[in-house]
Image 1 (tube, rainbow, N blue to C red):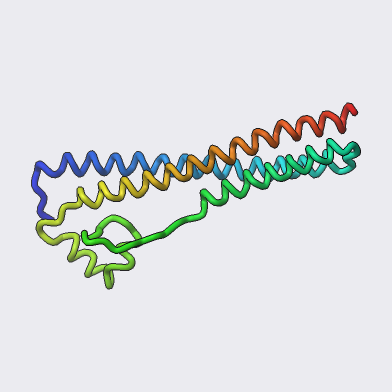
Image 2 (cartoon, helix red, strand yellow; image 1 turned 30 degrees about the horizontal axis):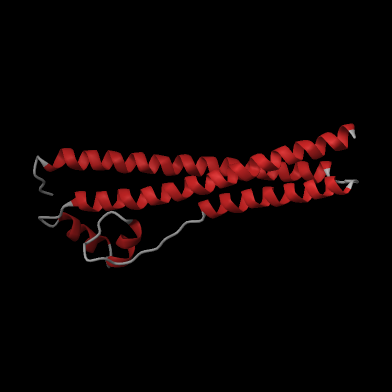
Length: 167
């Protein structure tokens, strides 16, 4: 593979940027997994403390808490749901996994395309950085909503549990 020496720093910078964006995606996935676990624990706790809810306001708070826990779980799961849209473009794609799977007949065709003289991988890397940044942004937005729902549910759960314990 022939590369100009001046291209290497640019490719390295783009590759590091892609790795940084991918690290943000992994960070968001870890947060989302933790939120799902907390939602499960909160749901179990709500089930235990609202078993014999008596006043109407406790029943209402319990139901609202359950809805918020469910909303948190749904938002977190929606963020973890993989989206795989691919719309073929005019430029040849060498980085995006879905494009590689759809555009090339096999490993030999992909290898020949990548190793062809004049292929500028920096364009593909820059495109992939933008695609992954959109994914990271979506995941963080949904995790923020899930966190807010779970925080509100936690407050309601504390009120219901406090009433059930100290009446």
